Length: 439
Image (cartoon, rainbow, N blue to C red; front, side, top):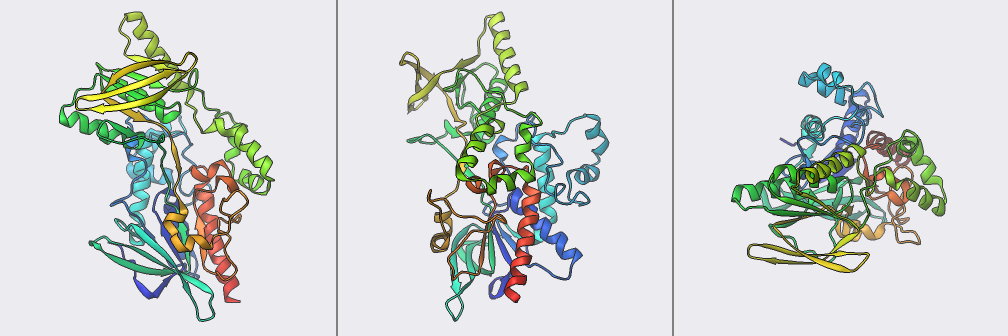
């Protein structure tokens, strides 16, 4: 069980809001520091989920990671850490078997199990089912904002709240599903983040699926198409996207250097026009792209069905969904073929939106505290290189961001590639700020 303290007299050096891979990596970095030093950082983490979970809805049985395993929670920061993926494999008794595969890319389900293994070892620092409701600035006698009071739900009684005080907060609430305007979710319409549970619900209820549609052209979309085609062995599966075909991801060695820790420094110090150019040049490493092997497998499946005269996999390219009507026994979806404007009406039983994610609204989460954050000419939050938000002059308490900083720190801000490094940078910044305040 968690041992997190409450009350204004128990002041944390840092409270983490959210406990996904980013704040898990920070918890480990702090724990390793505390074991090695007498200069202890007091930390706690609040997570709204009832247990650790990372994209559970897309933990497909054969899906692999798109980053190599050394980019785990610790290795890039501390290769000697016993929280590494290799140490996890050793403890699970699979180290030799994994190495015999000659791959850098584990199964996604296995990497999730690695995260759970690490999170279990940090259980004493975390309170689950503790959704953060409010973050309030707390002023000292001279008007200086020196702390934040963080209010969260009481896991034992969701009708009650608990308040904890911290000198710093570290926000790592992840991304939220992005949906087309006007989308109404239902038992038959969902985002890929709910793919596996939704398919399980349909199977449990005995609902027949004769046709399923997937909207989107990225990795998740292609994986959803492949998954549905395998699960519903008699159904037609239609991929709908505005491109002519899936675009292969650029995972070449030179392009992948955009994910190097040093690339964050380059991006951060570049003028706005260079940042925009770098982002556009290298978006094909991550956005709206698909692994080449999956593209080839889907094409081979489509061609094989063409040879045998039973086409279950359809690619509705250069198309978009114009209208969705739901009725008692299914959906009617209007798909427009963009070159001609012609509309095709398709009866369907399931529509999956593989339309990506977007950063959560920090203002909605932080409330009055969010108004202390300084913003640039584009209304983006100003963030220092150490991931600390720039704030008003009367504020000495710190706000750190893990994620939502693509505008300042580049593509890696929402990815795993530099998670371990970033955790170490935030930990070191917490120590540096404490030293500066003590002077």
